[in-house]
Amino acid sequence: MTTHTTDVFSASTTDGKQAVQPMRPAFRVGEGWDCHALVPGRVLMLGGVPIAHTHGLLGHSDADVLLHAVTDALLGGAGLGDIGRHFPDTDPRFKGADSGVLLQEAISRVRASGYDLLNVDCTVVAQAPKLAGYMASMVQRMADLMGVHPNCVNVKAKTAERLGPVGQGLSMEARAVVLLSAHAEGA
Image (cartoon, rainbow, N blue to C red; front, side, top):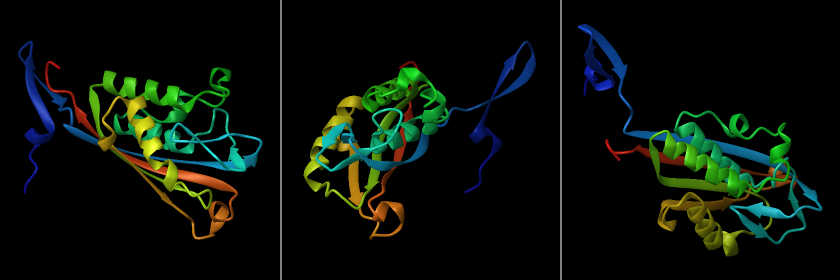
């Protein structure tokens, strides 16, 4: 298959001159990743759900590593930068912030830029605790926050096989991939 200039650019005429404008992609993919240290004395939040554990994640906000990865994927997929650009950890307004509120603001900005979320697939990497009993709650909470059906959200959990800081129980990380579609013309 050959790609032609007309596949990538749309030509229009203004004032008798040829103007070339980039076409808006029908689909965009975003990728997000986040990592936080585990510390005593904090509530562990994952996917907007409190998780029973001896430690929580250290961060400027509530440090929900999963919601941060999804937020980053959404913003990146829409070409809007990253979570730090929109919600910097140097801004006192975000001290102790609910990551669910940040995710809702991010999806609002993605929609305002002309894109809708088709699906998100994410993975939490943690040595402990076991997360299987929390998966359905995380999926439902994330779907509610983003205004999508739960079948558009997938959450997986993996261990780090006792390797590195995650495997030693010192931190957790999360990864997310989103698929966005452009709003239909006139929508």
